[in-house]
Length: 165
Image 1: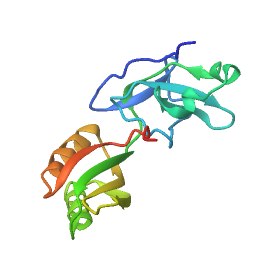
Image 2: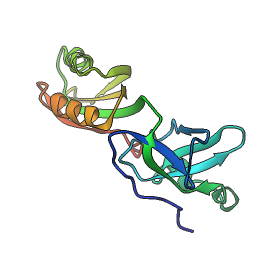
Image 3: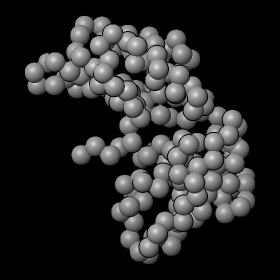
Image 4: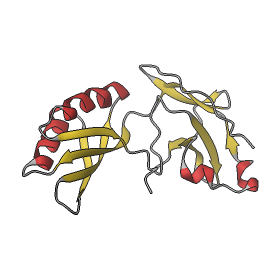
């Protein structure tokens, strides 16, 4: 059975539209953190309204046939959500002050650093920094990625789509 997905529509301001109706009780899923450029699907939950997931979310993929009947078309048409949580991964050469420098760039960009964690490789050569940012718009995240990639020692910056094993 294919997912009832609607391609993402990028707009400067947006509001979630569920099955052609806006203003319904909706919230963005905390498992896959959808952002306005993602392809999304709604899950009708009991007592919580429609929970919006990315179509590639692991939780959506795990749904049984009976629960798949609770999926509904949703799209971005003008966003009532003011702030978004955006988990990111930064791969860098391990060095003293790396996390401080990352935190400074995030702060200077106007984003809020909600959480940060790091894991150093066995040989202490590289570090993976996992952070969750609170952003106001997608362009802010793109600009931040450009700035983070300029931090000394940073190898790669990407959204954490939760698909690592």
